[in-house]
Amino acid sequence: MHPVAQLFTPYNIHIATMSYCEYVKDLPADNLHKQYHDFRYGFSIEDDNELFGRLVLEINQAGLSWNTILAKEQNFRRAYKGFDIKKIANFTLKDRERLLGDAGIIRNRLKVNAAIENAKTIVLLQKECGSFKGWLEAHHPKSKENWVKLFKKTFLFTGGEIVNEFLMSAGYLPGAHVPECHVYKTLQKLTEIS
Image (tube, rainbow, N blue to C red; front, side, top):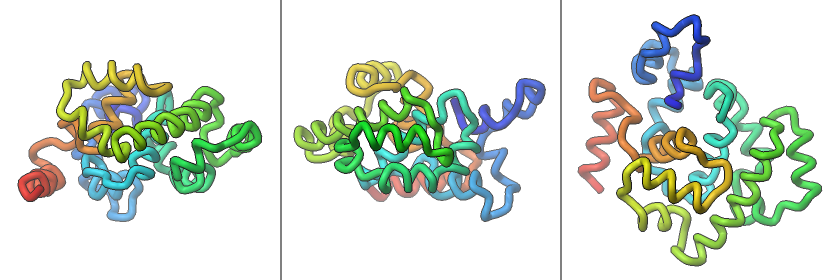
């Protein structure tokens, strides 16, 4: 689900139809949503660990607000060893229990297990394709439906909304920004350069 749709209660439905771009437009420059929207959302991610970290965050957002995830992002980064794929792939039962006891992150057994098992899968993909990004690039472009099928076949806890937001946030699917948004124009320029 688009981040803005998770910000509001059902009683604020008229606000929930607002785009994320519109929502952050007048927020202070140091606001978590403003920072994420202006400098990260929809931008290409080159580093495999950061790509994996984004996937972990999107998985953990399921059923929760994006605000909760952004507020806990540094806790996730600490708990998951800087999102180091190789370290997480080697997490033990003790590490799983440590994560489930960490109040700074989302303590959901399915989500914790998905992060660890998905890290193991990405290690294999890195061997096959050189990198997680290389694996994504090898399958790009695809329709959202085909991406979802591929992710469900490859990873744990990757339903349609999680896959959509992960790929949109990392620049593999369109729709992160509305055409009137200044970031949309920035991303267009970056696409023309590359």
